[in-house]
Length: 353
Image (cartoon, rainbow, N blue to C red; front, side, top):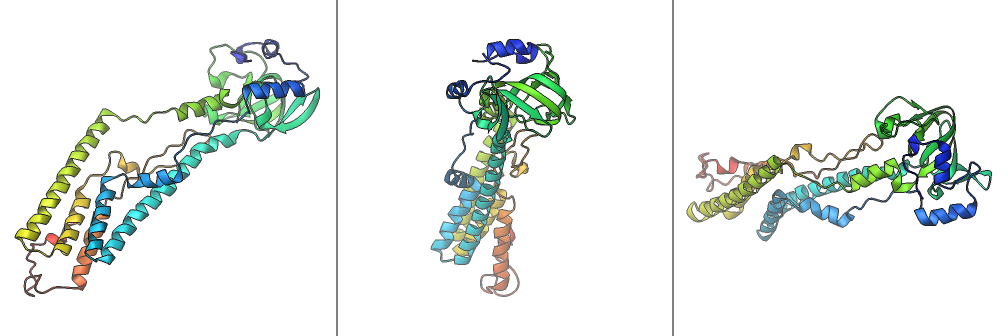
């Protein structure tokens, strides 16, 4: 039981299509329609569980390199290095997890825009009912300060204006009238309608429920957001492809550098390993679009919330390199550093990072 283009048709025709009356539905009719149409709620968006959202923070080459470095340093009994690396990895995961959770909460906040209670006419009497129990054909009574509980076709209006910024972006309240408008009128010009989630700023009104739940305009927007596919531009795809190959080459060069320094240069493996890890992590490129750095922001009521996964920090390799140098400064090794004459036999290799 639906009514098409209610904004362009007389209120009497809309009442006839929905088999409704000015005195309102009966309780039994409302129950039957509630069973047929479902509650007046927006569908809950599907979201990943906390465990999957947390594990997703480790799906990155930089983080995986750091985890591998932590394992190796643990085998070498360099527990301070292991602790520093794991602290960096865990800090990235916690920050990404928390901010992604905030963004998903903001996207779900649109479900709280519907009015929790509504004044309706049922059995010929004014009643206050749960907003979720509204059905098409109900007669809703509104006054200034009320939140519109469903999409309504106006039947009566006295000095009525509504704030519709959440749908149209218009900051000024829109005057409303029961008179029909053109069928092709845009959403913001349909003055014979009140939209679910908007706010009555002045006047009083009596309206016919034309749509509830996901059939409302705000529910349709929520459905479009839930069905959005994550697309990537050709340029970003090429950059990601290039970054993967570059990361592979950097890891290969780092492995060769480690082998050369240890077997040919006879450098101590633990210190050489930390230096190579610092170089590799600093050189591996971040994911394309990483400058957004986790934009989970709340724009419910003004536009869709956006959520981007935070890439690992650009300077994590520098942190490891600086920590490695700091440890060398505190614990100089005359034999390793060229017999105490202040020269480093590695030619400054440990200073890279």
